[in-house]
Amino acid sequence: MNCCNEKPVIGLYSGEKLCKNHFTDYFENKVHKTIRQFELLNKEEHLGIALSGGKDSLTVLHILNKLSKQNPKIKINAIAIDEGIHDYRDKTLEKAKDFCQKNNINLHIFSYKKEFGLTLDEMLKILDVKPCTICGIFRRYLLNKKSRELRLTKLATGHNLDDECQSIIMNQMKNNIQASARLGPKVGLIQDEKFVQRVKPLYLCTEKEVTTYAFVNGLLDEFTECPNVSQSFRAQVRDMLNELENKFPGTKYSIVNSFLQILPLLKQQFKHEAIKVCIKCSEPSANDVCNACVYLEKLKRSVVTD
Ligand code: SF4
Ligand code: ZN
Image (cartoon, rainbow, N blue to C red; front, side, top):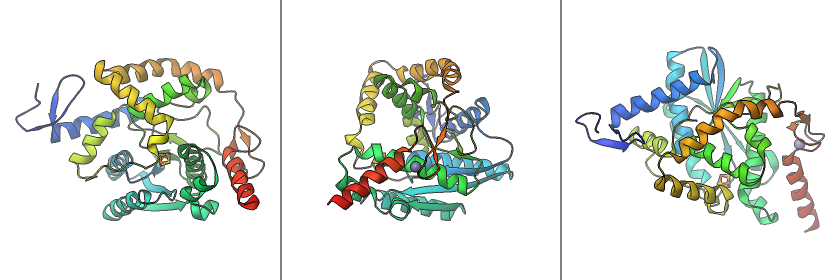
């Protein structure tokens, strides 16, 4: 069923086919509803948006930028992390810079090279680890630390429904329910001054919807993917879920919706887990030494032994 006489740009799970304008309204309403339903934003925020220059982060920035124009009490800043991934991050960062410049948005860029002394590419020549493992640890570390230093009240990320679905299944497969307890539209178990609250306004939007929104609204003209992605466990879970979704439409929604029903119980169960402070860097950590410091120490030792 078509929404109107205009050419459809997407077919929804419900069977409805929407044109560019109707889809844009549908998508933006869904994001606003998610923000209200899960109370992701207060009336006044000094909000950070984690920007990679990819479709998800550009979409969330675009929508929150519009929102901040309607609500002057919502101030926004973009934060980008330059991991140092040759021929990939340099290109997406150009898109990020370009977007922020055109839209008059403050952009703060922090790099692994400057903060840790090495790019991700250089780290991977030294350590025998999966790229996404250390990349994720260092990115989360820097995003939290820098958001706190910038006195941001919250940090919005571009995580979508497909990302969440993958995380839920990955945690099940690794028997790591505690990690699932930290998921959800509002990340984390308890509020702590060391943590800047992370929120996911695209939580209920599928990857297909986000990609369509980014392309039809001119936020992106080509699709680029990190060269390391194929090595990740996540990519295998993603492919498996896409295959299941094709055979059984609605699978991803069902996984995330049923997860949302048990999430309050999980958060309740694990809320007493103490947050420690890393003895080396004073950043929040689950152990005495945080994962970032563990890997930095390994890198230092490998460089010295070589
Ligand atoms: Fe980092 Fe992996 Fe994402 Fe590439 S795919 S940016 S290595 S987490
Ligand atoms: Zn540390």
